[in-house]
Image (cartoon, rainbow, N blue to C red; front, side, top):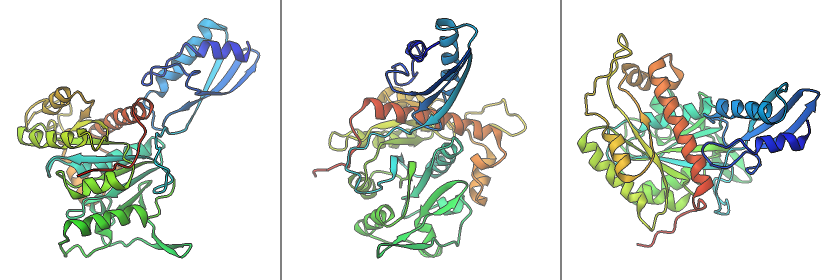
Length: 364
């Protein structure tokens, strides 16, 4: 066996999402051959890659079939999270992907989805941050059990930077960490937009594979401020199966589909899809209608990322500061992991196939 033999065999192994072979994509490194033993490293587009086992089996089969049936193949994995930023990186310089989680209306569980998406990505090995951009109704500090805590500051060449709170393996920042919970945030649009800019420029986010932004509901000032301030890789739309929620979700999809925004929609996730009692884990009761989100995604020709059930422990965990992904609830964890896996695949395909990620210049 030679290195050339190995590379030729692996040129028959396709990366399932990107549609090209591992060799063409320069994903094969460090080939080592010792008799019948061969090892190499496959560089994945994300540490949270859900197709790792499929790629490993395809590599082993290719070498045994095309090179040496007696080969003992060891496939190692590392990752270099894909990014398509071409904005000069003057802001959030260490962040590879910025994902905005949006909804057309409140009450659909957008913050719950954002928190558990961030946690699922981190559990897959990615470096993740979570920015709570819902200035008027912050909730991430509650969901992460850090109510009453205050972030520390550090000096960076004479400029003070806020250090995000680190909990459950991710970095989190929320306006709820900076204000008295008993006080309402009564700000006009420009003040709220200014606060969001500070969350970007005055917080030390460091090196991140993904920064998940929990956006306010609707379509307004803060949404425009975000896409004009940072290069948003793409948006994830959250809805419930209800007709009212779907009508508002359409507005969110339409906002980012406008020509002057040019921010790709990674996909849509349907929350509160069905009720599953803990004592009857195989039963599904469709309280708010069935497959409304899936049908909406099909109508707009955007990826459908998954369905999240109504499980009592999801609500309880958010209230006591222990999100579903760090609880012992297997039902909700499975749903969030499948959703996160689909989101990761969508982000990788976006980076490979669509225009570079840039800050948007919106002309009124």
